[in-house]
Image (cartoon, rainbow, N blue to C red; front, side, top):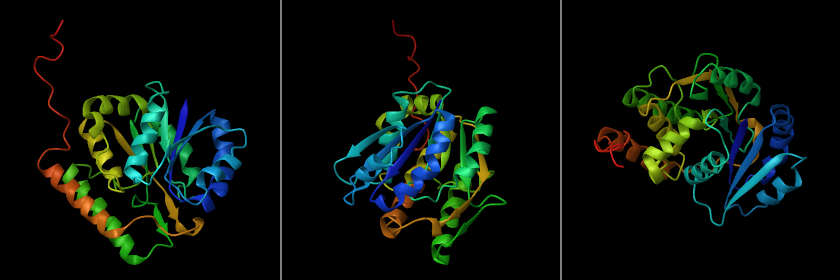
Length: 256
């Protein structure tokens, strides 16, 4: 089964268009849709309720805005509470920038055995439209830095939210890392989670995608300074070994 996880913060303007695109695909897949309303104050939850269109849909609500990473963590754990190990958990943007036409190819690679399949704007054939040049350079710098630090040189984009995860892979990582699975509350959480899954042995693939920012209404929710500081923390954590899976006691499994 497929489960969509959609973190959303003040996306009321985008929900209607998103669900027009997502609903027929979810129906065709027999999929469950889990929104995480991260403390929205613009009527996002009401917009979701108004456009359910018979979807198998649930909403996880945060009373206050806690950041993308925290919303992602809540959504993934909600999905894992329902999922079997071979189910697909698909995380997408709430602002219509995830091109769902790429999903069949992503699910095809998932069915071939990959544990994480991500949509990559920097892979050959991918791209970003309607983005300020400085933001594009910053995004590329982040991906390139962690590609080399994390040993994922074959993957071109590490910061994307749009991904397909194998539920069993996420579950094993959640059991290994515990509450530290997604430590960063903001946008750096996407890189953090990918590095942790890869270091835990996940097979990772990517599909080129075009991210068109003209499809979204409203401004980006990313605050540059806190995000830059978060990536700095993440790089430091990786260099000192905190991204690696916690050590397993040599006595593990020997207790009666």
